[in-house]
Length: 216
Image (cartoon, rainbow, N blue to C red; front, top):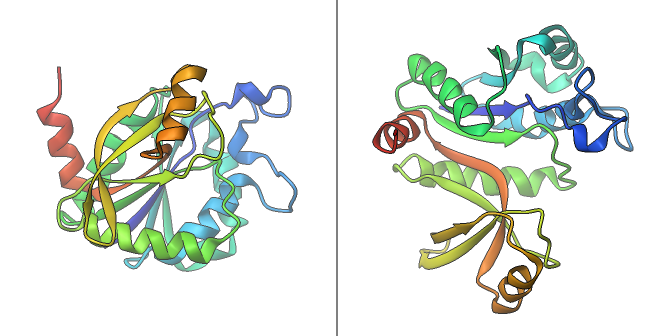
């Protein structure tokens, strides 16, 4: 079972006043009639082969998120559960919450974890790549989605790619979180780095085991 999980807890205050704590970025409509959250759901819900999906969000946004789900045509055939955080603690706790929830539904569930605020014009290409990622994740891999850098941006984390793993993927050699400008230029020139998109795919139990192994 592939379960899309949308992370929709951030306030997005960098876009203030358009996005703010009372009206966070996932609810924004940028150049269209649908919000960023709704666009993410429309991209992801066709992948929910077991008819289940989840949104991890702050409890303060429960009712607004419900409105967003109800306004999403793709949600009519998928049961979208809200997993509510009392306080946002970034990605890892949100992923742990989703993994615990999913493992209770299906111990072999594969999670496709997506930020709510991405703009991806080609939804078909996204779903094709996501399905390939799910196949790798089902074997026990933790799969990340890299973006080929177009400029030496310092606002992204970078992933250095390692060995080729068949035709589907590359191993991860290391992460570099938001390098300075000089280092970003080196990464771009070297060609062995991609931006970390913040999208992930893994079995629920795989990520729970990894978190347990690396817990302080």
